[in-house]
Length: 318
Image 1 (cartoon, helix red, strand yellow):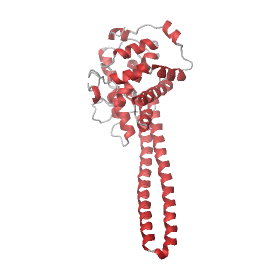
Image 2: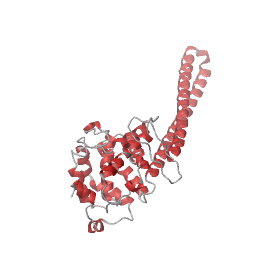
Image 3: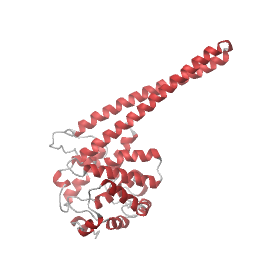
Image 4: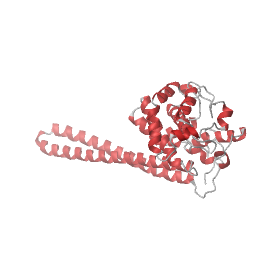
């Protein structure tokens, strides 16, 4: 079961699920493994520094003692070879650590939506959409990789939301919507006090992906560039995925209708520059969607079955 978590985001206690699986405990176990990798990485850094110092000493000594130059050269060569070995070990530890983070994140992402039959495709689409938009925005390869790892974690806080709210067919009441909004702070609580920049990025995405460019979002009502860029990217990708996918309260919307809704949110709900990039490159996002949803409905069928959801009617999006 997931226990109450002290945090700085004001999240209520995470509501336990009745499936017998303690996701928070599982997350902690994964986090403990990551800490072991970090300790190994720190140890190898110390070893690397020691070998660097030894190599420098050997070089200076070989210069000062010309008579023993051959011996010193051999010693320096051995030290350099040992240094290369340690560098390879260090790189291997880094790779293992990043794989451990990725595995932990994927497990939590699946746990957050494990009752949804579409979970696997949703996580994969969100990751690829976010990576694609991050590349279009000009992020570095390291930032793009971080986005790949962390974007699926945006809704991890839904672990703590009641199923009758998550899977309600119709419009949420004000009380239900206020409860649903807590998934942002619950997610941030689950990922609170991270020891890794990757987990910190995931925490920010979970907390801020429902903030709006105009400051009318939640949970904190921040606006504009005060919203972390990764959260702004995920906000657009998450909206596109929600619009074009089947949900308990709606059938999939056609691509052009979905783009029109996102376009109307330019400078209001979403970062205007990101909206421009998204709409200009919509064919790329559609290609990603089609490559993942190979068995999904074609666009013509989606259009034939299209009706506005009650939630969107109430929100004035029609």
